[in-house]
Length: 88
Length: 79
View (spheres, rainbow over the protein chains, first blue to last red):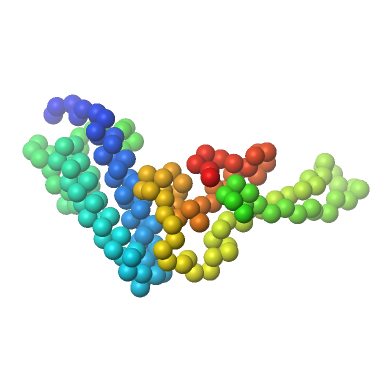
């Protein structure tokens, strides 16, 4: 399996993903107690869409983010490949 | 009450027979969420990257909880 190149784009994508994920967590918790806030719901959906795009971009280039069917994999099976999150 | 001085202080009783040197002033943290019952909608927000750094999406709820004993009581990502 070719050595995965951890280049600038790799870290930028991960940083974007983390930032978007954190916003989604905050909005989700906020919406749990403010179900009627349409602006927040619109923002949440917007970030959810953005998250899908970032994750798809990352997975196409660097492999699956999650296992058990939450991400796709190329051949050969990529899930077991390094780097793992603590190695990044 | 800006982000760096979310503390209140009190002076415990110091008796003549205390075994150890007295701590004359003690502090406790009062983060902003103590003063907001229901978070109002449409509060100003950080950018996604800043939210990651500050640990919250809304500046109004930023609570760094710096080390009370440090003189400036200000930590990284402060405002």
